[in-house]
Image (cartoon, rainbow, N blue to C red; front, side):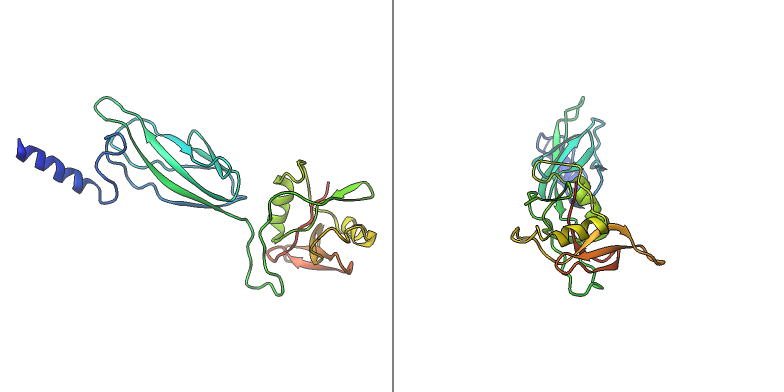
Length: 231
């Protein structure tokens, strides 16, 4: 009997150098469930199940719905931060239940290309803005910098002052905002901000407008500029 028990323990140890024999419910040992890193603007993704000798389906949960939610095996990013993603396997015939967890880390979408001069990329603060109205359009306060694609996604996908469906302003719209003088005293960052107006040339680029001077220049889409949203 001692020889049988010893052999079973040895087999369990040799079966996996990463996971312990069994699990939370003394089920079969599970394979690697690797840590996950994502950006806040990343699309929903499907989890890769850890290996298991049991055929039972995994049930996934998130410890922090403000960061990510899980439906089936699909994870949807909700915000910046960390969440523990748990993969639980119920008992099945001779296999007991077991589980394992990993950490999902979601970072801000903001990037800072090394080629950009005089523009340090800053991540968005918590949604909320001092709105300015000009010619019937509502502009959200400039609070951060980012690339053109991320700026577009930020305006389209962020709820600001409890309102959704924002967009980047055109060059003409942003010029009228700058000329109105209404942004004074509202704690805006008065640098060059993205517009949705395309710039000419072979490279992908859009116009940026200086909210302090009203001057406009073109900027390559992979560079960064301030972000103002309008609706």
